[in-house]
Length: 159
Image: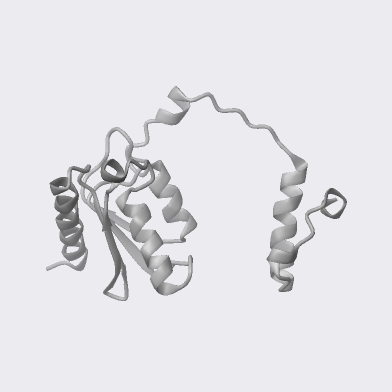
């Protein structure tokens, strides 16, 4: 059996668990070096929490298990095309490969992007240089090896 198919089948089994518990049927598996690091299924309905998507939960578990948010060496398998939120989390976790079983016509953000957000939500961008300086200083200090928890964020320091 193809390795990707093996893990997609596991994701589908997890989706079945979600459905049995009354949740939208999506399952996700994260694999590193042909070993399952984490797996999860949607709990959004049961927990009444919009971010309880299978992919988010699987990423969270993988980060905890590997003690890092850098998941470059991992593959995420999902029973459904990840939504915009999950795709953002996948990108932030630096996951390089995503395999999914079916497109998500309503909310998919990889193949099926329909710009639902820009059609239904007013988007406003207000630039704030203090915030930009804060971000720049964070990475500047991180590269220097400065403890980022002790960075002075006073307005004068940011300039």
